[in-house]
Amino acid sequence: MQTVKNFDRIGEENAFAVLGRAGELAAGGMDVINLGIGQPDFPTPENIVEAAVRALRDGHHGYTDATGILPLREAVSADLYRRYQTEVSPANVLIVPGGKVTMFTAILMFGEPGAEILYPDPGFPIYRSMIEYTGATPIPVPIREENGFAFSADETLKLIGPKTRLLILNSPANPCGGITPRAEIDKLIAGLAHHPHVAILSDEIYDQMFYDGEKHVSLLSYPEIRNRLIVLNGWSKTYAMTGWRLGYSIWPDELYNKARKLAVNAWSCVNAPAQYAAIEALTGPQDAVGKMVAEFDARRKSVVHLLNDLPGVSCIVPKGAFYAFPNISLTGWLAKDLARELLEKTGVATIGGPDFGTLGEGYIRISYANSQENIARALGRIKTFLETTQSGS
Ligand code: PLP
Image 1: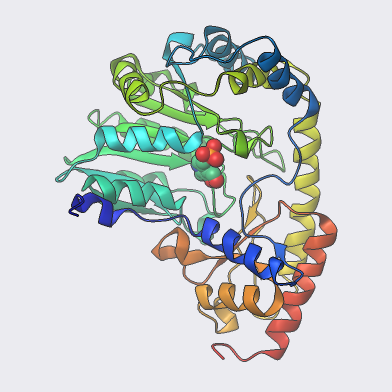
Image 2: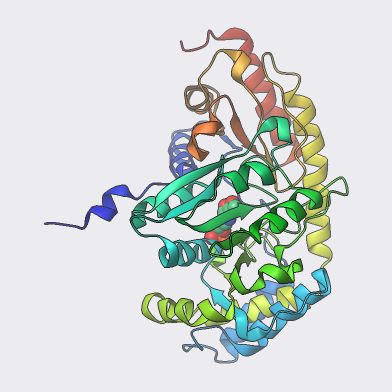
């Protein structure tokens, strides 16, 4: 059989491989603590689950409009207005099966041989994977610890050239937990005025997960780029709905119909009862979100404290999402070797930094979407391991 070359270039998200291996080890009797996968360990709030069940009972069993049902698109607009005081027409909202689908669509729309796409490194691995799939040239934008894991406007702008088609930004960020401050975003947006040919994909999937008063700034707040801004968001993280496969994107008028056509070709529409649940998530009580974020904040503090107590490890305080990205370079371990050994020998799942890009060497990602008790147990095991095991052995 002969498949197209592009498929040989598709990458992976190693978090899923680690999840699989952790499952195997657990099935074999090991007490595995998973600090690898990026999903809230909370159940979806009951009122949201009930809305889906009700939708099924009410007979919402069929296809919906490929763009998503209007009341849901209206609810997304109202939610964005409530949170950012910015007008987004429901006609620019596309309901999609998961946050990933927006990056998939946007990268397919702009990527082809000869084009360049800028993406964060370390960053969510699917950006690079999809860029390579299209044959476009991936241009990494460095995300540096010394910069608090925020992106630098100057560094980003310098990487833009005549072939740049798309700039991917992510704040609050996976895997480093950084939040790019408003002043830096202002500077970037001002600089982008000199590059009107560049579209922007802002991945805001963690937009409600910020701590210490460092608020998330939505790129929707900048009217001057609205005609070339694509926003990725969804329910997976905020409402603990990763398995529902539900997300939304905001597209400028010029691109909306292209994205809609891909939807018609690929997935027809999002699962109908999930769309009704999504309305309830946005319009119902929001206290579950606040409680979850407060719990993540408490865990964040304890995980950072425990990480900084490990030999050879230092960790800056992450400002958003639910990840810590400790620097492990002084342990003498290569990051992926350390992550592998921690899982195999101690039953603690983490992800090696290089799985998020070349600049991830020297770091591992810890997802603190696990109980405080498990986090303390896991960090205790890591401590014993580092104290008693020679690096690389
Ligand atoms: N964007 C980022 C930065 C993520 O970390 C993730 C999931 O981990 C996604 C998008 C994808 O979200 P979803 O599970 O809704 O596809």
